[in-house]
Image 1 (spheres, each protein chain N blue to C red):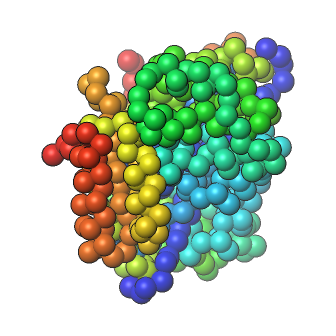
Image 2: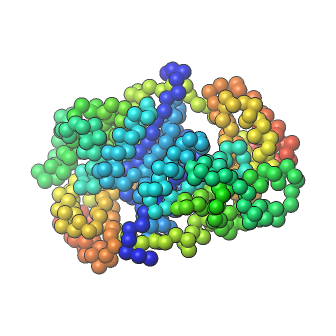
Image 3: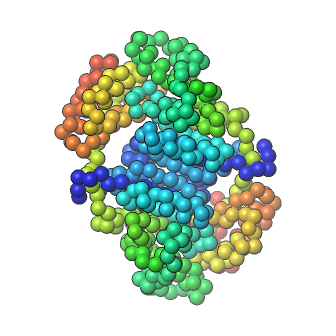
Length: 248
Length: 248
C-alpha cells in the first residue's frame, strides 16, 4: 500500500449483457472490492464476444491502467473465446496449463466431455493462475490483465483471491449525507463548498422514493478528517436550505 | 424499419457507478428497448464525470455507431457536466434552450434556486429535445447522440419517447432453452450445430441454482423459423446428452 493513486479498468465480455438478457452485477462487486484495496475503477466497458473487439479493448486499456480485469467467456463452449483472444492480444500461443488440466482431470467423465472441459485449461503462454475456491477451473493473469469467470458466484470467488495479488495505493474513503431536499435548493451552496475543498469530490445523487424527492451527497477523498468536516458543512447547508436530514 | 443492421453504443456517465455505490440498471433497460426497435447495443462504457474523458468517449463512439445514448450528469449541481462536455465534443457553444427554460420557469421558486434549475436548460447549440413525461426538464439530442438523465425512472421516461425518433433495422429475435445439464456435456454437439447454422448465434450461459447446475442456450437471429428449428435441435442434443429440460 502506497500513496500512489492506483487505477483499474474492467471489461465485461458478453453478448448477454449487451442484449439486456442478463443484468450485470460483476462491475459493482469488482468496484467495491478494488476500492477497499486502494484501486480505483476508472473505466468499464461491456463488449461483445467478438475476437477483434476483445483484442482491441484489451490492447487499448492495458497500457492505460495499472490493472485490467475481465469477466466472462472462459467456459468450455464455442462462444467462450476470451482466453484465445487474450493470447492474440499478447501475441503468445494458447497452451494447456498443467495445473488447470490436473484440477479438471480430478473429476472423471467420458472422453468427449473431458475434451470439452480441458478447453478451460487453455491459457496464454506465461499466464499465472487465479484461484477458484468453488472447485472449478481457475482464472488466469498475464501482465497486468486478470481474467475471471462471468458467473457472479465464481467471479466473486476468483476476485477474493486477488486481494493478495493486486497492490493497492491510497484508499479513497467516502462519507455520505442523505436528505429530503431538491438538488436545486442546495446547488449554489454546494458549488461554493466544492470550490473551497478541491481535495475532496462532492457527488450529488438525486432520488425519488415513496413520492418524496431527496438527494444523497457523497464526499470522497483520502483525508478522513477532512471528509468529516466537509460532511458537517454539507449537513449545515442542507438545513439552512430548509432540507430535512434523513437519519438511518 | 429496414433490413439493415442498426447499432448503438451506450455511455453511462457517473462516478457512483464506477465506485460501486450504485448498481447501474440503465444499460439493461436501454438494451431491451433498443433491441425491440431493431437497434443492437454493440458496446457500452461506464466513464467518470471528467470532462476530457466524456469528450473523448463521445467523439470516439459517435462515428462508429448509428446511435450513441448517454445517461447521467444532466442535473443542476456542480458535478453535472454532461451538457457542457457534449458541446465541447461537438465544438458548439452551450446555450439556453427556450423550451426547457419555459418548462423550468413553470414551477415558481426563489431567484437562487431558479438560477440553479436553469442550468438544466443549457444544451449544445442546435440540440433537439427528448421529451420527459415525468414533468422534469427534457433530455436532448445532437447529431446521432442522445443524452438522458441518470435516475432510472427519468431515464425510462426519456427512453420511451425515443421510440419514434430512432430508426431501427432488422430485429434480432431470440429463443431460449434451459436445461439441467453441464456445459461440457453438450459443448461438442453445440459447437457442431453452431458450425452448421452460422446465420444464428448460439450463446451458452451456465448457472447454478439451488445446488443444481444448468445451462441456458440462447439462439439469436433474424429468421424466426430457423430459430425454432435450431431450438428443437438444441433440445434434442441436450436430451441425448442425458440433460433434463427445464419447462417454465
